Structure formats: C-alpha cells, structure tokens
Length: 185
Image 1: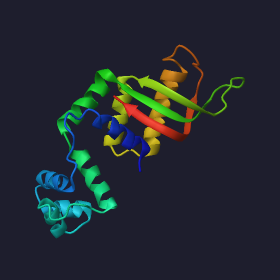
Image 2: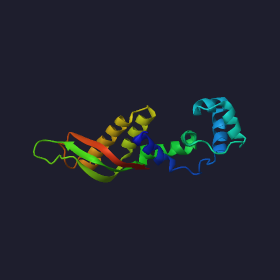
Image 3: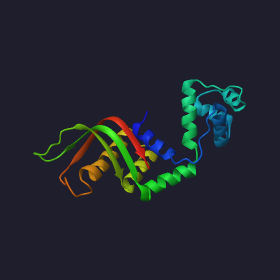
C-alpha cells in the first residue's frame, strides 16, 4: 500500500460528482465498457473470462474480499476522468493542497538550534506548485519515498521557514514515522 499515493488519490476522489458503482455486477459492467472486452478485464483482475461474464450477467453477486478490493480500486482509478483531471488542475494552478499529518519531524540546522525530532500534528496548506509537483511525480510513477521527500521539502518551506520569513539556515526536514496522513484539495 502506498501511503502518499493513496492519500493523493483519496483527495481527488472527494471531487467526484456521482458515486462510483457499488455492486460487483455494476463495477464489472463498467470495467468491461471501459476496457472494451471481458478478456481484458479478466486479465487485469487475474480471474477467468467466464467469471467476468457471470458477474456482468449478475449470476455471481458477492466477490471474495481480495477480488472485491481489486475491483473497487480499478473502478475508482477510472471513474470520472474529467472531474479528476479538473480537480488536479485546480489544485496545481490555483487551489493548492492541504496536508494533515501526524508524524515524527525534525530538521538539520546549524549548531545551537533545537533540531530534536518529535511527533508533531500539522495541518498545512501547501501552495499550488507543491500540489503540481506531487501530482506530476505520482503520474511519473514516483515511489512513496520520493513523494515523502517532496512533502518534506514543502513543509520545510511553508511551515518551518514560513516562506522565507524565518529559519533561513534550515538545511533539511526529516519526515518519518508517519502515523496519519491525509490530503485535501
């Protein structure tokens, strides 16, 4: 599971104007319509083509837990692409993104300052350029570690340095032991 990737995805999904299909049959029909064949859906979900056909006809109604999770994830990944794109575009150009986290944070600074790591709960509005960097990195297949580094850099600039008004000599922010992480657009 990808903490940052899933968090960004959840923030974008809050912008949906219609709920995604709930029942297994409706989800399967939606995926077949999107991928244009039962065979493609079967390969993606790692089940037989016949099983897909039976879900489409509502002959099977309750998938196993692991299949239900894969099904829901794949549907939400494709649901309302224009709305998803608009939400991401707005965050990356005008709205920015809010990060709410409870994690261990500390920083590297010159000798004589209190740089002790400690658990902090922060809710910080990040400017649009950081939303753009996070989404671009996610689209490019960035690892959770890379997304975490972008978020740490954003917190350094916005929270610890107050956009250049203080702590100018701060070198690096450590952002580890994440207990809670949520994004909002």
